Length: 167
Image 1: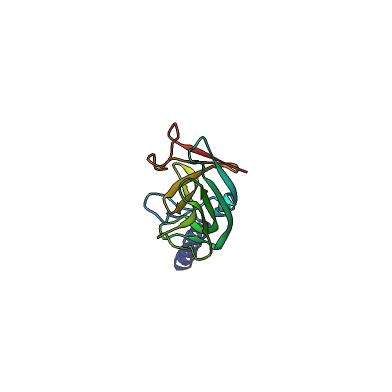
Image 2: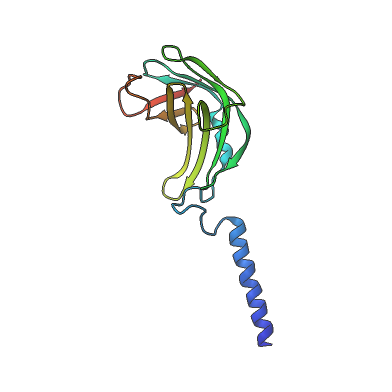
């Protein structure tokens, strides 16, 4: 009888641990907690559309047309996807068109990233690289993006961030 109880108890423990692992309640994939589960990576769809910089000289118009392939889980957790579209900045680069060929972090590309972090919550951001125009924009809500790393030698703006509004 004691042996039967041990076997049943062991099976129960294995079942409970398996349930936690399958539901995402186990340990995170990354040591920092980034990408440790939760949230909805389909939020990367929110970047699709036309974004216009505000109070930036010269102005940037970023058009994101569609995702290239499926949203992919990254190595350190989180998710990413590349996009087709264009980056227009008439005074610097005219218009750079990004197609299905632009799926590498080398050269010109638009990549969306989605991570969750226990400390900061959901973080949805985009990395844009087109000739001399490059920046990282964080999605604030469905119609506002904020970028903070534009080259101050090429662009004039006041404050720490540049706001992009969805048209």
